[in-house]
Image 1 (cartoon, rainbow, N blue to C red):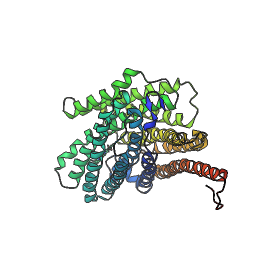
Image 2 (image 1 turned 60 degrees about the horizontal axis):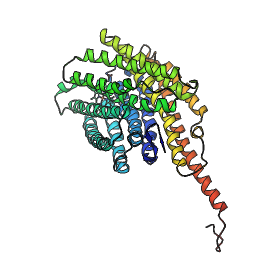
Image 3 (image 1 turned 90 degrees about the horizontal axis):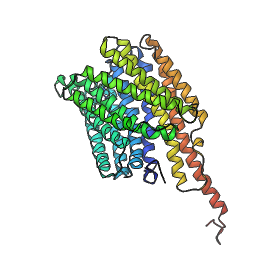
Image 4 (image 1 turned 90 degrees about the vertical axis):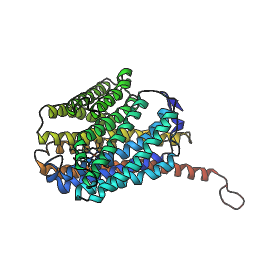
Length: 431
Ligand code: HEM
């Protein structure tokens, strides 16, 4: 089956992306527990132990699991070439990423120095093998396009983020000079603007027009976006421009991407009145605010609360909203596609995760944000915010597991119907 230049027959077995998608909500629950248990200390400074713990539970836990799962799914479909040995790779990769994220979170939270070294080793191995394997598969692919360009740059950015993070982790463990910690600005820039933003944009070029029924992104904008961000990051790393200018440019680029997406959503062919459209609108609105806040932070630094607010909006507002919205389209789609390849009459995509379940999750997620946005000024809000975040993660898990159950019960129903329709043989058993 082909559409929009995509080759769906290359899609991987559903168990590969799903194992990553299903692991993600557990990191959301852990991050919520940090908010509930240590919220007061967390909202004192972005550098506090609970703040760094929560940041990494969300980035290398929640976000990385979903994005690695999405990469396994999107690459063969957009690139037309499968990832060689993908089953074995996914099987080996996931324990390394989950173990690395847990070790890093424990290291920050409990000042556990071995945890820093363990996480550096786990991420260096896992992400090293992952990035090299995916690069080989991208190399073999003849397909071109903005999504593949974006994916390539995002992978380089992931490698840079992990390399800088690993070096800083070893410095925190006392194994390297503490001077490495001065690179935290570059680590954050490569991680948030390089890896997260370019990857979200690369996936958006594909899924926003396809799943949210918008017009396509302007071609030159989509092709140039990742390249421009990559160039700014390289210039900052090489010391050609300072981190202040780089942050200003990156923040402006993020805000422009969000504004273009909002405009496409506003003008889309069907009214934006479903939950997924709302998740994406909310994520993009938060991204515009984050862009403006980051520019303000650079020009007038020293506002602790505004920096914390940017963190709430990046992790809760942008990352969670967009990734949950994406999962609620991608998961029903890949399950539907799996059935479609084998059966003629299959459940519709809405039957995997119903509109009511998605809408309920959207309103709860919005309530979580409304409670957490003022928390930098009044930290007791961390407790209700954390509880809402916990429930939001449980809902995500329940909806994903519910989608899998729909697949299983459909297959069980077909098998039962086939058996019932099969005449018994001479031994009285169905053939
Ligand atoms: C891949 C995605 C990652 C992202 C998006 C990310 C993001 C961040 C952010 C935002 C901060 C600063 C917190 C703040 O500004 O409030 C930070 C600090 C830090 N990150 Fe990461 N990180 C990632 C991966 C990693 C990895 C894999 C490691 C280690 C193995 C790591 C180790 C560190 C360390 C040690 C610091 C604190 C540095 C210091 O003491 O100043 N990070 N990271």
